[in-house]
Image (cartoon, rainbow, N blue to C red; front, top):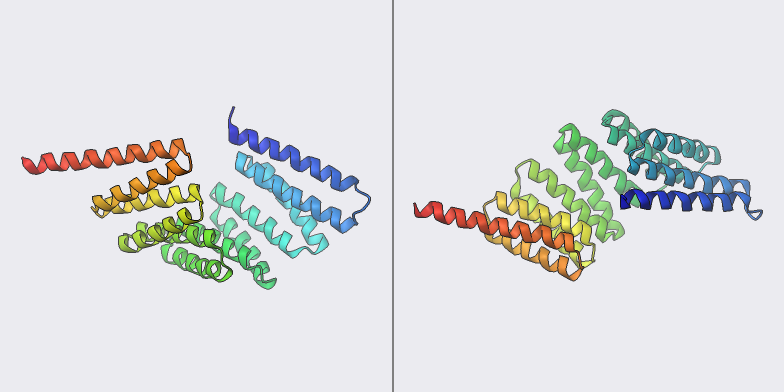
Amino acid sequence: MNHARSDLKAAETEIRRLESLARTSTERTADEADRIRSLTLNDLGEIARRRGDQEAAVEYNEKGLAINRGIGDRLGEATSLRNLGNVANMRGDLETAANYYEESLAIVREISGRSAEAGILINLGDVAQTRGDLNTAAEYLKKSLAIKREIGDRSGEARCLNNIGSVAYICDDHETARSRFATAADQLIGIGAVDDAETALTNLIDVCETMGDMGAAREWCEQALEVAEQADREGMHEKFRQRLASLDDNDTDDDKASEK
């Protein structure tokens, strides 16, 4: 069985159970019940999106959006709009995605939702990057980074640095990419965010190899192995073990070529 799909199904069942309890409670006002229902619909929409059921995702989020607008829940409205943007982005409808994100961004700026604002700026950066507008993508990411630092979101800051590094890498600005990936990896390792650290370390090894700095690539690969071992991540450990072996094989081939 697909564990991710099984987990999503279990989450959907639990969310529906909680919604049922909220509906039948006599202690809640009509607005409170609607707010819980809108949160439920937003959650179900995200579950449907992750399952790949885009039609259901749109339906859930549009229903949540209507409720949020009806009760004047501005943050809930912004969340529904952002979720709809995520579905459009997944479909490749970049213009619709950007419009939803911009509408959501305007609301969170109005209500001073700084954390949500930083997240939406990353979404807009992703759309710009997909369109090939790398300068605009970088600007969105820099604005998001500033907010992450302002609110003390260390994990979000590191992920944003990794995204900035990815844009720089595409632009062949390898020194900037390397610097951003390294900072991101160090921060993510420091706070124990292993999955995100794995991504940053992979990117860092890639750029070091691209730059021809095989010594640094091996050093980061060895650090990745340590992180995987400490976190008891067998799959991650095997991935970087193979990567290190590949780096060593390349060095051996280069040595043989130079002897000829």
